[in-house]
Image (cartoon, rainbow, N blue to C red):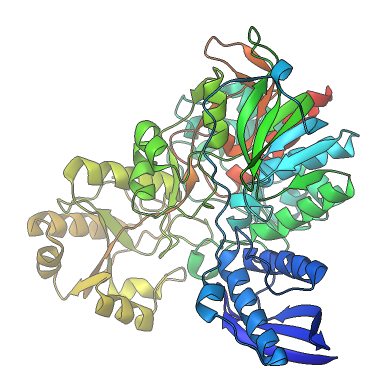
Length: 592
């Protein structure tokens, strides 16, 4: 047996394929170089499992991790070609980048009496992100037969791209790691309701906050997720009285350097959830799209199962106790975003949304097709991926101000990121012009600065940041009235020198700044839309007349009404998804 090696560049790093060959036959394929605890690493493991099962390097790339697995496939083919003195078509090898199954949803209605089911389960879960994995694991650990169906080739969904944190109040971890010894779920609820600006359904928020801590303990005791620290989000101006450090970080999760949100740490939790669900007996079907719900009969709204597609073939699966929709929101659906969510639409049409490609709101559309109500649309999860501004109260905004296209300050710059970007969106829509972060050369010496001298010089050279010795000259470069920009900065500096901000009540990074001056164009990075199917506290989907639809449940970002017009802080979506996935499974099984 001889070992052959070849390299190709994946998403995170250069990947080395190692192919063991004996008498021209593949004995084993291995890989080195992929960054651990990433979506790419999970894809590589999945690809290797299939390649070794088939003793072949012709296995397709894995959807959801196509760049890394496409690179591994190419490298493995090159190594095998060397072993056999053969040729490899490098172009075709490199272009095998499987996309998630986005088979069109079926418009027609399906009824149980007309269907010959291919298989049946107690619970069918649509989507295997954080909510779906939690639902599958919870149903299976309570003795139910479970099938989870996922469009991608790997589990995890957009939760795998999250920062590896979850919110909860009054936990033993919060008491251990913070000064907030007396925080309560009631205070957490009050903060979320204030941030929801009257749009939230209180029973949903109450059930979430009351159980968030219990979910963290379940993840630690059952799933193997270890909690290591707790921190807080930055300001929500009108919810300060209910604030506490509630963002729980698990081992390997947290934030990246300079305050920038770490994306991809969520893979640690989703992988553990997947392994736990498998160990409990849950079954998973990947590269498969659920394309329709099956109703009990023509006179009933009760859901009896699903129609799914794989490889051009339709399958029918019966759900004896219920279907849980956990297929995200309308993240990558430009048409629905245009209809339902103006701020999110601006991001997704410019390809600024980082959610996985399979998040197209299928669960929402299928629910609507049988009369389900929707709620909560309009918001989005926006943050500045370059600066990481407003993500972490340990990393306050540098001395700086935001100004609109008229050179006027318009917001608390240290407000939590999505609150800030809603204000940015509104200003830019109102004036049809960009907004800017204005700061001085001395501002980058702040502890949390996203720039140092070298990186700032690079951004100036690229044109991302404009600079000038005077505010008048800077105003000309960014196209705003000079008198307004001068007045905005002078007003800030005057009050900041006294340590206060009477205009917007900012409390951190309140210091004056001086020239030379800089202007950075505020640019959103998007991690998904807000809004989904209307549910009650049991996660039972509600129809347009306020009645529960028997047999149909929704969880996580597939559901609406528990997050408002902007995202209230890191760890909310994942914590809510875990909770609602578990709640939906328990509700189906009649558990409290």
